[in-house]
Length: 436
Ligand SMILES: [Zn+2]
Image (cartoon, rainbow, N blue to C red; front, side, top):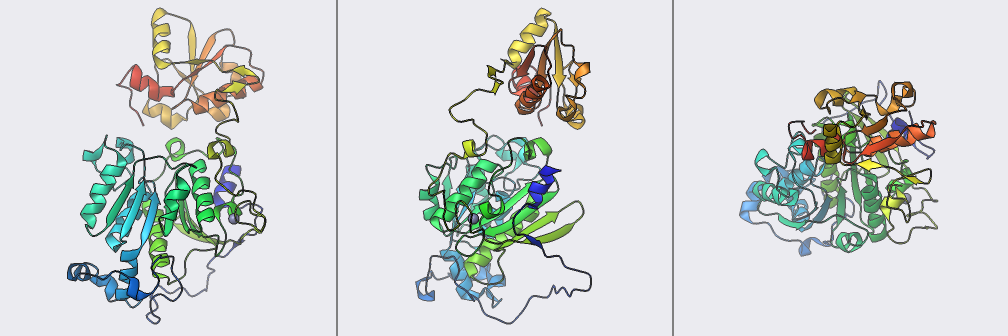
């Protein structure tokens, strides 16, 4: 399955599998020897003299760090001096932010433009039930301030864009990527390469997670691993495919771990290593990464020298086109309220639902017949070409793909896409239909 191959990074790059074999010795006892700051950290603060001091209150708070030689007072002062920018306060950003705040990272930048939704609470533990409807940035700031009032939160209620990313990234020592979509992920990567910042990466889908530290100055970047995004629609989002709530907790905690190590300048960071985690089998694997000399952004002759239009790059917006086009003609759309009016009028319409059976079980539009997207061309015989057909899914994307697939296979009947899918139906026609 191509989707899986993409997710696992098993592509044409020079990646090698490095598993722990039976018989290998694995130690879970931390090394006691060695001091803090064995290599130059990412922190802006240079000598120990320039680092901020710790108050008695802070010394009491961080005592479990201070008694470890790998952190110690100097390491804690490095943490206090550090400036970490987090993109997103969702599934990954929630645990990352909470642990970085608890650890005493002096300045945490948080970027988010979203509002807390009830469906976030299954995994986004920085937000609570009382926060539903609030901007995530406000909810996260309150929670992080409560965890540690010594941390300065710099909140940006905005979407990260090609226009603001470079200016923002320059203000921080490193960026923690908690994004959930390809355009922003490539934007974060390229902006990190262009500003020389480490990109502490994590991604999650269903039961599978990945983590790495992409730092072009010292190794591979995200584009060395994935030079190009997958075709649009090939890799479903968590909203489409689901995600186990605890998974971002595990991957986000790993990102926090790596960010802290980068600040301390010690340990073995996940540079040139891609960590793969399967929560269902409970298995960690690791792939070795190599910097690609031909990488378009961090290679020897880079072709990407500034930030680009990442929506277009990821094929989500065709150049100079804003409407969905199939074979030169525009795709016909209907709103949920129009559909309801037409059904009430008694118009002869058949409704085809192209979601998955488990989604159909959660919520359905009365009278809709279920034919999942993957089966729509094989089961075309079940759709009456003589009747007008309204195709719907959860939000309108899969149904548009179903219409394209049907037209491509020679279906001659009239096909109309339900704009906004069953979510719009629930919002605008029947609020008793649950949203998921
Ligand atoms: Zn690269």
